[in-house]
Length: 185
Image 1 (cartoon, rainbow, N blue to C red):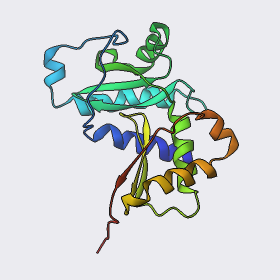
Image 2 (cartoon, one colour):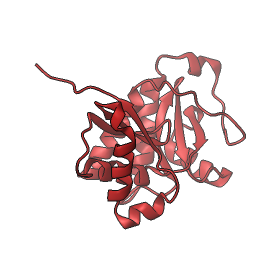
Image 3 (tube, rainbow, N blue to C red):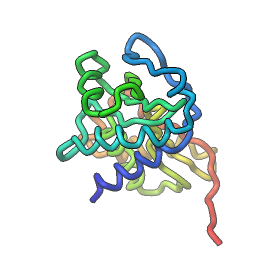
Image 4 (tube, rainbow, N blue to C red):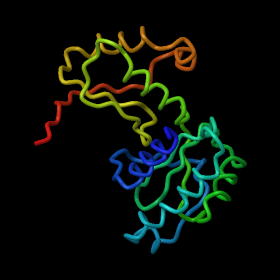
């Protein structure tokens, strides 16, 4: 059930416009025609390859999978292992390799989602939002009072479960920003 919710959340992220510029470099594997890149159908076209990739996983996501996001009508697949062999694996899984691009990231989505869950479970934190930012490979936390940023980070660090703290021995991939509570009427 939880995996299904994460897949749904990731799929929703696919449809959102990501403001962060994509990194391009030697790990970029494929190019797509200018027509396909400019096509408004890119978003619709990306859904099927994304679903093919995530439904191929048995149980948890593989450690190297940092999830994926849509930008400039490309499906950017984030991998902790940016090797050509790993890229070929995901190209084969997708069913539409021309729409895929690859980005090397530091953390897999399992780690970031575990961190997100730990933040949500941290006592004495008042937050307006917590969510994985796939494009930035971090967890974003919105708090109503930015003067509490340092205390919030300290509470998160202190209350991390030991096995999770071992996965993030250095600085936590967390961005804290000011965000007010939304009210629904």
